[in-house]
Image (cartoon, rainbow, N blue to C red):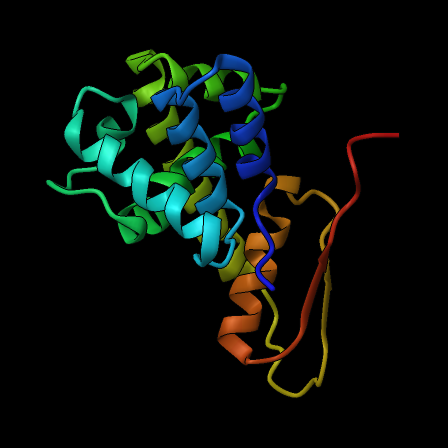
Length: 178
């Protein structure tokens, strides 16, 4: 049994309500499916395949402005484009999801430079945090707490620790919410 991404369900509802396929909704659903790291089988695979076909036939879509590649496939999306979108969502202080949806749906290229700059900031902050880490070679389970760690870096730092030491890694910080 393959789990379908919630974005697939939302896309299918939009398809029924609009009495047809809206290509921009399909691209948004495809982006969410890859971003959520869903298994690319069954309907997820069909959704991603169709979205990639549409993207490659219309190079005016704003997602093209986030890559230097001449062809977009699931790897370009997963390793080049979507990490930039995720960084923007993780690192911005105020809720920005509606701006990202507008970026994808309306080919709004006004955010391109900001998205790329925020992604570079995220990469620099992550490198800085990695350089500040103690050595975890002699522990079986990594639990790391840093009071002033940006919440948008928590899971990224945990992933880096897990990859670096091949151990289960938990990273904690204080929440900015009450």
